[in-house]
Length: 188
Image: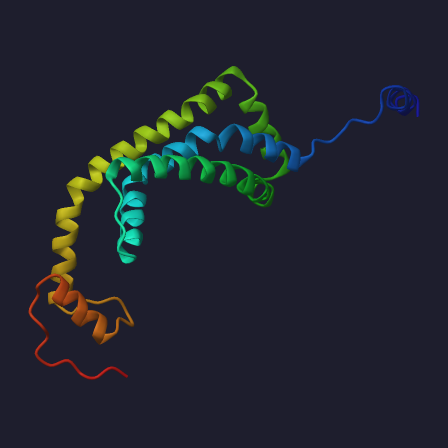
């Protein structure tokens, strides 16, 4: 009883120890790890794909757009998409942290991010992601040819994913100038 009384007095004077709010920790983690620079880097990596899609959609309506005008349109579009993504993904990502990590892990992760080392990693993450995307493009370019050749071999050898329709098989064979299958049973 003698030990409990001083603890009660301290609690009354200073309040009970406050448990960390896991969602608050998760929001902080998201703010530090899902940044504008990261989203802008991801969109920059997809710019060529988005450019092609824009030009294709316009071509469907008989319209054309220069590469320069399309580049500007993509820049403007991705700036707004980044804003929406940052706002729209903040809470769901924070919830994902809360659902997948213990309160202690969230608290420790936040504490790490609040250190100079954690801030350094947080600040470098966008640059690391851009480097990763560049490396991925380089590696992807070196593996694309062999992957396409292996895919064509699979098509020649009738090694299709389960459930591939015969009409889809025929279409892909024609696309890659592969000889048609001599006997194609009807689709069921």
